[in-house]
Amino acid sequence: MRTVDLILRKRGGEELSVEELQFLVNGYTSGDIPDYQMSAFLMATYFNGMTDRELSGFTEVMMQSGEILTLSDIPGVKVDKHSTGGVGDKTSLICAPIAAAAGVPVPMISGRGLGHTGGTLDKLEAIPGFRTDLTLDQFRAQLKELGLCFIGQSDEIAPADKRLYALRDVTGTVESIPLIASSIMSKKMAEGIDALVLDVKVGNGAFMKKQVDARRLAQAMVGIGRRLDKKVQALITDMNQPLGYAIGNALEVMEVSQTLQKAGPADLTRLSLELAARMIFLGKITSTLDEARKLAEDRLMDGSAYAKFKQVVAAQGGNPQALDRFELLPNATGMREILSPRAGFVSAIMAEDIGRASQMMGAGRSRKEDVIDPAVGVILEVKIGEKVEAGSVLCRLYYTGEENLDESADLVEDAFRISGTRPDERELILEVVG
Image (cartoon, rainbow, N blue to C red; front, side, top):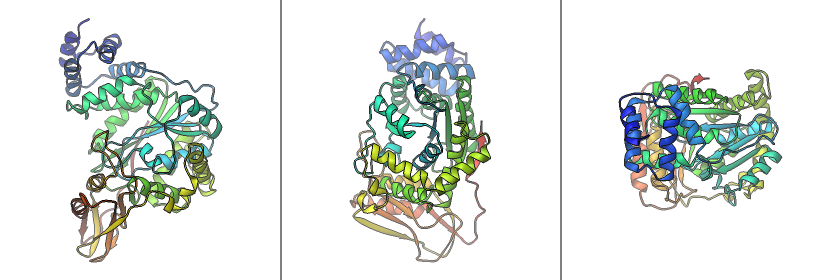
């Protein structure tokens, strides 16, 4: 078997067998296939896509390139949740404790953010003392005891994906739907889970800008799960404005705490409850989705989800008091208000610009080695559809250094659109796939 022959066949739109895909992935992981040949294969895939059979085979080969966790000694249906990422998206820290409080074992292996704000791990590490570098034995023990554990991506899980992602990043092939789907699902399927709930974001603050592309990605991931005998459901959700009001790591932890104490923003609460309900339903705690929705709401309202989150924070070395006393979290040293230039209605908030401004202030990374400032970010005072007066506060920027501050403020100011008429209300959950 020659690598160049497989590249030529893929370039010609032919379907490759599982054995051929295994040859490519294993050869690249071991160093036998050089970057330039794998780059050619990735570009051929970018233009020609993959068949369903290829996509499942490619995902399984990447999954089997490293360790596959076994969680069979932990009773119950293990359910995880994954989001494709958005501005102000902190739902994992809310829906996971709700589902765990309802009896679902939630093994949450998360990543760090590369872009506008931190990932789930970065948000959690804004809590003083919180550790995400647990061993797999510690991970299993906590999952068995508390039903929920947050840890970082292990180097042993799907190592082929790590190498391929780095290559995609520098060869212009990141946007390929089959390559995105296989990247996400190879890691998730190696976690030892039984079911998965996906939140696929679409809009100006999301990776997918068009709903048709978000639907194709959701369908691809649900299809992979089905062919690997896992239950997978995907929500396609709007990301044309930030989710909730807080953007930035410690600021988002504060909003998570408020939401788990029944005082969170309506959009964030609604989406978190729906994600939790689907986790509960796939976890076979209830026999219908409506019963799962009722149970999710009960666990939020009776305080048991908040208690579960504080338990997990304490178990992983964090200070649970910081969830009630926000002065114990990293706090910014400066604040700047962005004012409305005119009276009217907020017709748009360009989420991507808000995210970029937060990143420039230090809330996110442009390179993997960048250090995040957990204290900085943006807090919105208004959402789309609200009436504002001239000179009223649209949002506040929280910063610890003035480098890039003016540029960030200009970006945020331009992100708000004020019009004379109230815009039509936008749906938050656009579609369900699976």
